[in-house]
Length: 325
Ligand code: ACO
Image (tube, rainbow, N blue to C red):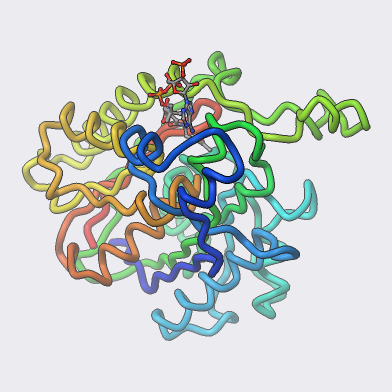
């Protein structure tokens, strides 16, 4: 028995922040952002809109596509680094918002790789027969932890959510492999220092701007290209296929130049790589499910095709999944 995506949906907040808008906030320009990152605009959640609100909208669309009721879902997993609160989990708020009451629900924190980690967890729950229908969501409101005075990060980030419903199936569809990795020794390259047990929130942590994402972009760039290419090739190997069998690579959308570097190392031409970074920037755990939904909607990937989802992010974490659609 394989595993199929019974339904997929995404949600992007309505508000668009363009590069021209950013030029008015920090010392940057459209030309720099476009050539260095590939990003033209990103979406920003409105005031009062939390990560679970985005996740719920994406989940509702996935449920509709799957023609399933909320009562059919027996586990909800939310991958996020921008939870509504420390606790309860964002998955609890999603459960409440969807009017569910008995499913097992929890969050996972693996930054931009969170959705890939979630695919591994969901696959094993399904294979073990623990659950029948799992709602897996990648959702972020990165705008809430963005330092709008830091031009090195604020031009990159955006808000959004993507959701899939996974279930066992007699069809050909399957999650053929999942490869996951991490290097906690490099955690200082991308992190948010304030607000946790290390630096609990005080007036001083706010004054020192510790409640914002900090990043050493240049160092990350090199690790990202290598880790994503390695992960994708390892997952392809684990699936017992070759890169030539892959219809579409759906990479984490952090920087167009990272994506180009990954494609080069994988020896895959860019027409077999899905890119939507120009529209949404980096939405962390949400980029891969949003891109997967768009690729399916646009007909770039169809039933029977093979997609490789690959990501890299804070932790550092990385991973890839080979999916037969
Ligand atoms: N506008 C104009 N100039 C800028 C901007 C900006 N927005 N940001 C930086 N610069 C300047 C720098 O100050 C520097 O100027 P200097 O040479 O006078 O010192 C120059 O541009 C080059 O800066 P670099 O940091 O070397 O630029 P780089 O080409 O590396 O691009 C970037 C920076 C886009 C951040 C890139 O390094 C990157 O994408 N890194 C990886 C990010 C990533 O993958 N993060 C992980 C996922 S994120 C997550 O998990 C939430």
